[in-house]
Image 1 (cartoon, chains in turn blue, cyan):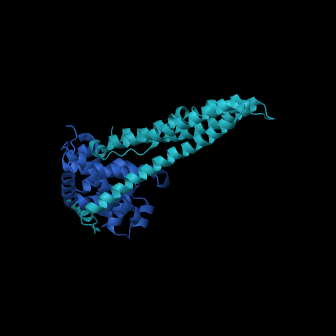
Image 2 (spheres, chains in turn brown, green; image 1 turned 60 degrees about the vertical axis):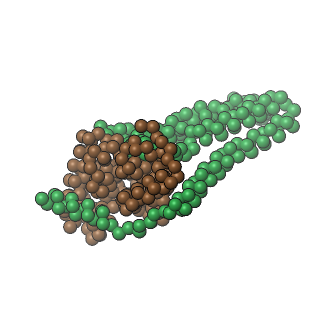
Image 3 (spheres, helix red, strand yellow; image 1 turned 45 degrees about the vertical axis):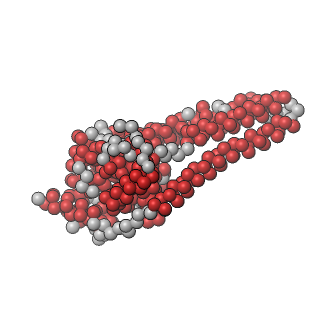
Length: 175
Length: 186
């Protein structure tokens, strides 16, 4: 369906609706991509701006949820790709699972709050795996995860299975 | 059962985070949007402005130069500077059509960002080195120097080779990032 041009009032209405429904999720998403507080605020504002501007062409090509999450993740990915040289090397879900049980991990995070451990886990992940785990934690169904990320249903199921296993291993031990 | 309770526990941790609840107002959005557009305009003006300064400088030199070979070299360098400025802008400027951000799924978007960067680096010989080469070679040929022309051209070739090597290596890293992305969706 071709993108239609929305009026300014429609654009504002859609934005208000989107922030009402997904505003908190976008803030959590920004946290998943940016640990630094100042940069996170900046990223969140960039995401909100991109979502608002994007609604000028929203023609219900997909659900609002898919639309908003695609914009948000794509904006965040652009930022992390730009900063790639200055951040630690990312790992995949499989590689992260292999790090489980190392003494360093237990020593480093044994005493910290579970939420901080969760963020530390997410920050190590490659952009695509990060997108899936964040969407999973937001209770996004598998079909929508696939629509947002471009993953096939099989790939989504595989990644979700790995996420569940990882979370059980890391948070069962730590709780 | 235990798996489900861990799952719920972690999701609960995630979704019940303490948030700042910051939302930009309509006025703040409009202001930031205008700031963003101004930043892009400023960046474009800087890129083309730098090229314009180079061209203006060369134009003055060409005007007062009596050696026709050096004049020709100057004209070629002016043309080269214009081509480089245009190509630099076309290949490396930020492309942020807001609607496009939503029309592409995350994998396609990420792949396109990486490919664009990779292609710009791979084609640096075409849009960065080649436009300047005719003018520089002619200028070297026209200069009176103790060093033989062959030596000076070899030095030029060495610089070009180094530029190609550095950009090629960076393009290779991006290619590996694209391969990683492709493997993760297999």
